[in-house]
Length: 115
Length: 116
Image 1 (cartoon, each protein chain N blue to C red):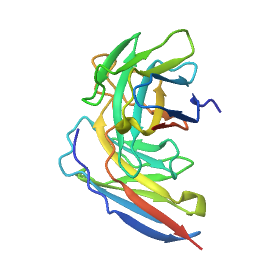
Image 2 (image 1 turned 90 degrees about the vertical axis):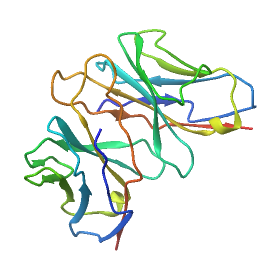
Image 3 (image 1 turned 90 degrees about the horizontal axis):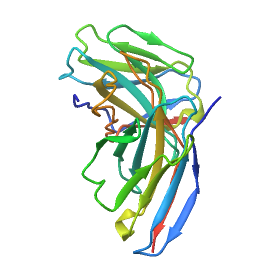
């Protein structure tokens, strides 16, 4: 799976958009970009994923550059409850057998949302 | 909304004792995982399980560890002889198979294992 690089920490004011960047310059054509977050010692939580098109769901938007070497997770109106560590993970699509579906977590970005 | 549950939330044990951590994955999910997170460190993959057998395991998952799906709902992680360094938060996760494309892993709240 491709390596990712994220800033170690970011701050955001409540109500503003939080834009979390991720570099994945070695991504290959069959690898997806996944975002998870972990709120203080809780289990990681899936946020969104994408291959090459921009994606949006009820939690966030994912913007992937045309060359797919980087992406940005956008939380449009951050709240205090969005304070968490955000992980960008790149991996291939699911395999039915033979393993390869593990998630490899890095150190992520600690997002602190403040009043 | 369906969720992964884990019991107990906190387990304290003596070094050398056996522990069993229990998980109930989401009911229509077919892939099951265990991860662990030592305090202040990254979340680490331990093992994945599909169709009643291990699909993949990490170097951490040595002979002291085993997994089982004893019935249609539970998924367990057993540590035969615990060591101090096994102290960590253990997360269970599950995912459905959506065919070609993607899967989302849903994580439980974790079991904090403390080995004394």
